[in-house]
Image (cartoon, rainbow, N blue to C red; front, side):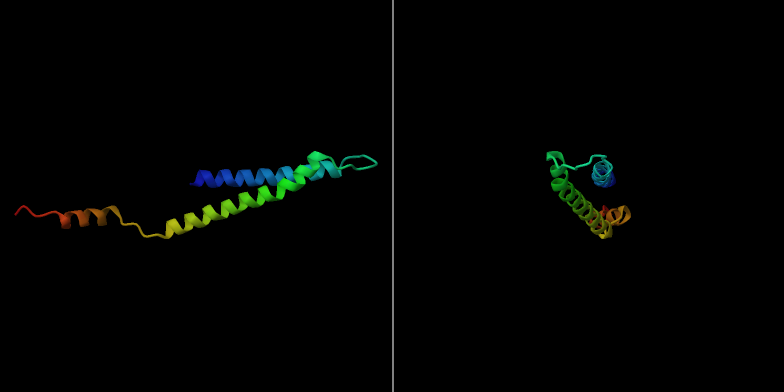
Length: 91
């Protein structure tokens, strides 16, 4: 589960860094006139929704893990005691 959370974090950070790099590259372009082409439009359209989708997935898995860790699970000793109580005595 932790590996999945790390993967989601890395994917989210990668998308964020890609978007920042893309904006920096376009702002530093030394052209007298700036033109918007297809790749600029695709990044503008898909960058925020991808980031939001990954962030929501991260929050979902984090919440699911928190709920799962708060659930009470019987210990091995409790399970062994319950099994020995169920077993008929041979005396």
